Length: 457
Image: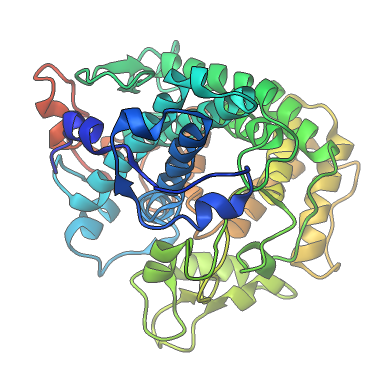
């Protein structure tokens, strides 16, 4: 798939022809199909600028991003999916040996940069804003940071691969200009992500009608620092989110529900017949009608199929003999949580354990997860050691976030600390755990440095 940034510029402002009156989530979720209109007409005033921002959210929530493809590709790269029967693009990704071709991942790559392009369009036209300038700037920088973060996790070796993180990352795009892609060092990419999020943290309000908030920016900062193994900052930001008391642990089954979850910090909202989120997740994982494309490994199922673990209701090893499937996505519609309180509690717990501080708080975080998972039949002592807290945090995360696209990040993050945890037997820094850039990116710059080819287990 060729990525033509000139075409993106011409066709963008593929904007919704709507009047955006507030910042309520219903506005961008109930937008009619996108239509192309001239850029100068689309962003003549604040209403047009909000429409551009809405269109960025549409990409972020669409099938090529958090509507499913980001989670699906992450799951294929991880070690909880039984992908032995996968073929084509899926077989290549699961086999951890991607090429410059492959429409599935290349479509994701294009759309992630499209979301960045739209965010940059907002930032370049903030002079059109009147009452919402700070809010729109914060939203745009949040989306730009979120998108760059996803890209650097997919297309570069993780933070810590080199001692100074000078290894090649991804092209950083901070304007709408059509420039050939040049890979920035991973440190520079992470620095830019953090810079954007810290501005978003200051500019965004506490409540924002379904759009990104100050708390979403703080939660994403916690995730970014955690991925960097910067546990002091990961604890700082996760603790701010948790102690805000704005989010409440919900039932495990409610995390993906049409009504939404009380623990979602940033989510893709689904609106009946207008913007139904999670279509790609349903398409690949849903198991109530047919055997789905993605099934779980026996090893994963054994970890959850234990006495008193209420989470095993989300997995079925009977309906399709010889296959283990999840029932998590067996709904006609649901909201997709991108960042939720369960994840942030597990980040705080492990970060505390890694720094050897606030261990009682960390143990309570683990117990909150255990109480829900095991119906109040399991806990750890509040005086638990850092080692015990860390072991529990990692294990519970592997179950709590199964099928949500998190496992491969853990394999790489923990690997960068010197511990290989991949159950497929690969080392954390093998070439195949990094996706290959699309041919179109390299075609725009003949000196573009591709990732090394080669697979791993």
